[in-house]
Image: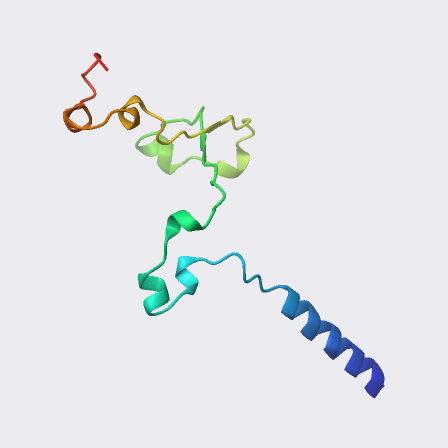
Length: 106
């Protein structure tokens, strides 16, 4: 019985040791000068995709208050939200500073 407990204990400890990755450093894991001197461009991060519902009902008043969400059977159409990638990011200098949504001559 002691041998089985010992073997299970060694397995749990070994699995815990492999779960820690030292190559993937996050800024939130650091403390002190390492946090202060963290260079975000030296560490690769995977971009997170954000999705939004496309065909959402806009209810107001009593209809919103009395809706029964669990009875809805509509299919949700998800659309990926795109952030950045605009024309403004391609501009530099005074053109970037003076860019406005009404500007069409970029």
